[in-house]
Image: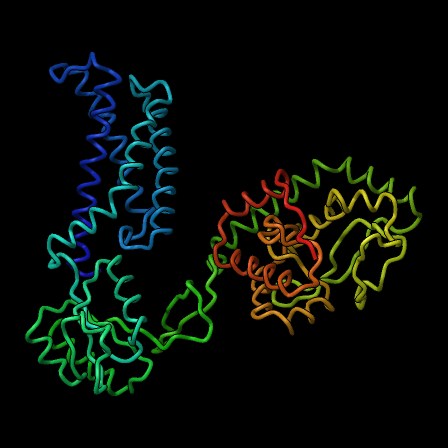
Length: 463
């Protein structure tokens, strides 16, 4: 973050700090009108209360929000405000209970937090626009260099950069003509004109599109920028696989861009999910042990034979494993090579099997798979080997599902994409929802899916 970005952020945080304390004072004034600023006990309590709120707010700023909190797209901005609200309430509640602060014995002390969060939610974006309109010198003057900025592309890019505190001044590119819809920018010219442009204009940062520039040309641009003390950001050639979750890191002397980045690539989050899976599965197996026994007895009485059906499924990293299910059919296919799918009114389904399938209780033994580490509670549903081969040939990016462990239920299932996968729409939507889950995983999302699985009503999509 350069000095101008930092200056704008500091000003916005200062305004937020003042707003928080104004909301707190107004709340105390209307709730406790007997307070007097000449009362020493009131001032002591006010200092305690202000300290609780401001320390909680400071902790959220430092550890919860991103450094570029205000310079983000609308959805992420809203998500950050709501996340901060959740932690704000938690921190203040904890401190009030620990410190036993007088006058805050009832939960009404969280009202200022909601008022403050609401005001921040509706005002921060307008404050940012106000600061930009009042003086563009507060924002980072930016120059674009290279190809890849043509037509509507440059318009979308410059509009997005405004949200991040950048003021695009123009661009340099080695071509003869400039399209008319790009003439609104002030600086144009060839790449070799960079020294003169930097000498005659106040430029804070340069964005270099690397798509059509030779390595030597890029190094020359960086050298010129370094001579003028101008920061440089490189934009690599757009990959074939578009994803919002790129992550760059260095390996030796080379920069490596990791595609299809998932939160579960973080080791600590992987451990957190595995711990949650293990404890949740253990709880279900213990709590539902009587139901397991009852179902086993009903299956055996209804149709003599094995209690479990253990077909082979494909899991994480394309690993093959035995998937445990309660047997619901009188005749079961070869667990490894079976290709016949369940049909409507399938005569193979037993009487107890119909009830188990309708209530999804036939899936309960898969919690054993979760304990063994073959599956997760939440994730893409595991497919038969035959069905996986069919999906691979007809659905783009299907095998990306194997980045994570399969689940007993998943984001696709709670959104209605469960059951048959006959049409192209059914296949594509199921995979689309699975990939969205992988890229947007969080423990809260897992809990939401569990809640929707138990209490939601998501009907199967029609053929």
